[in-house]
Image (tube, rainbow, N blue to C red):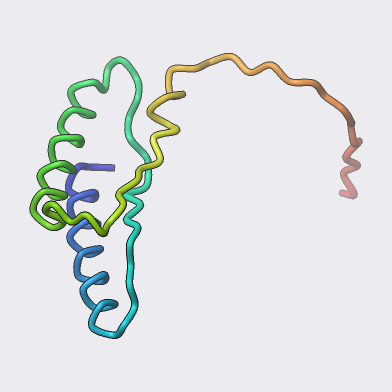
Length: 98
């Protein structure tokens, strides 16, 4: 995902929220999603995305106290994780009918 994808989505969200307002729908939440890179090699790329997102939010949602903006940074936080510990509670044998 590129920073342009986030910028375009924020711009489109503004248009959709304005359209909704014209039709009596009060939208108050903007979820910019996730997909942020989180590996050590991607720090510059993340900074580029963060800067572009902040500029787009400032342009399209300036000081709008009615809009709550959230993101889903899960991949950013766990991208470098590499260990999974789990308990297996059941097994199912798969039989190939061919």
